Amino acid sequence: MNFRRSHKRNFSKESAPAETVTLRMERMAQGGDALTHLQDGRVCFVSGALTGELAEVVLSQNKKDFAKGFAKRILEPSEFRTEPQCPFYGKCGGCSMEHATFEFQLEAYRKSIEELFRRFAKTELPASWKIHSGKPYGYRNRARLVRIGKGWGFRETQSHNVIPVAQCKVLTPALNKALAANTFPNVPELSVFDNGSGKISYYYKGMSPAEFEKCAMNSVQIGDAKISMDSACFFQSNLEVLPELVETVKKAAGTGEYLIDLFSGVGFFATVLKKNFKKIVTVEREGKALFHANKNVPEAHNVSSPAEDWLAQNDASGADVLIVDPPRTGLPSSALEAIAKANPKKWIYISCDPSTLARDFRLLSENFGYKILNAEGFAFYPQTPHFEMFLELKRV
Image 1 (cartoon, rainbow, N blue to C red):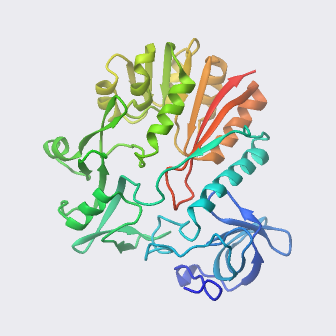
Image 2: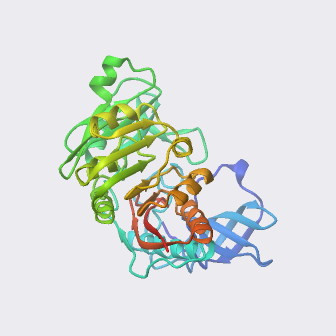
Image 3: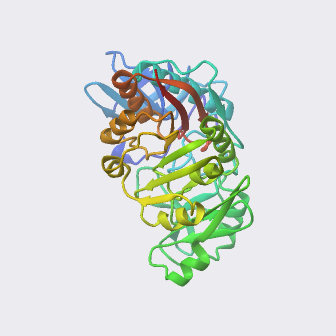
């Protein structure tokens, strides 16, 4: 494709507005879009464009305070623009950053997140903060497949339509092999998981208990810890980079008497830290995760409860280390205040959404005097804008 002439993405005609403008991209925003300004001064977020590029932009949203659009044609391409490897780029709802080199993606993560904390958290990340990354392709060990005809596919971006996919560039070789073999049951949707040690498991709604035990149950080996899980529950999707997050958390946590692991899932962090603490509490909203937590950390007090409810009914003070790994929405305000008032000796915050992390940290900084001792980033999802952050916090 000649990017000087055309860089079209597959958007529906119904969503394509009439107005097209020519814009120079200024920088990358957190979330994968390029950021620029319209002539009237409004911020405009442009998908499919990179820093410095001149592009014809179709405005898909034209709001009072901002606009959004997509790059219809790249007039002056960046040196970091590359040909997407996937034939479904621009249609599949997955890899929206394939038009950028991986080198550019990592630097875009860094710059956009530093700007996010500077503008919205009113703080600077430590100058030494680093980003951990692995392979740009062939890394994803978990996926949700949708049945289409006799095969499988993924949903289109912002649509319920399904694209048939025989192979996916970001899936692990083992998952691609299983996808090609197509020996999975004939069901509408399927969650599949590659444990990295030769076992592919799957889950679909309505499985019998016997089939769940045989086909959905799995385990993952991280260092000397064997972690029980199943294909229906949440688990990280990049087993190559995950051990680096584990080592970062272990180094920050150290040893102590009392560990609290909130939003704990199957008890993942408690499992890798259980040798370092005498008393452990895990708290997870999803009741089905309790089975795995009891199996992974039988010596802990494993609780099935929303974290905010548990904090309202229990005294979290006295913890040597408290770990939170909340969903993208971040910490509920009541949980944030309760943890801050409990004042654990060490607080580790792991986030899958840097924007809500920046919001929460600003509240912690302004209302409770917390500062960032250490920050690290984890590129778990190359070719996408998704990014994981680790913060070690302390009240000053």
